[in-house]
Image 1: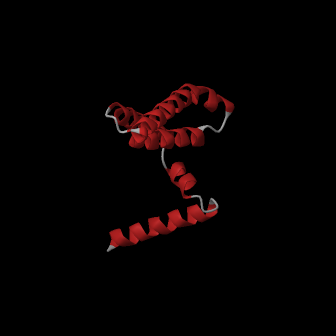
Image 2: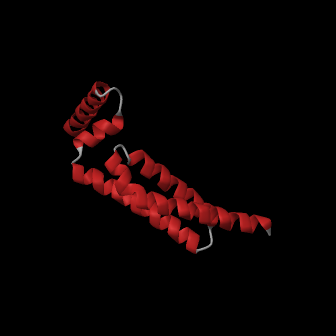
Image 3: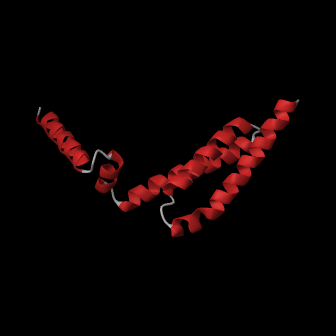
Length: 113
């Protein structure tokens, strides 16, 4: 019973914090986690999208690879908030755009048959 009360109290406090931050749940959650956890989560997402897209392309699944590469490109673009971020991410963005072109070529060849 006390556990439920504590959990409800924590939930209420989290909701109040979210309202104080203008309803931005992500900002509130990131303020309660360490920067290392946030970076680790983003890096894990980057790797899973990148390696998934490469694997799909190697296995001949152009549509899946295209989708994952577009998600990766969107993720990278959303994380670049400064000029320095853009400079650091530019090699990955360039490589991702090349893979998108390769996926489109692969898809168009299979459609033409």
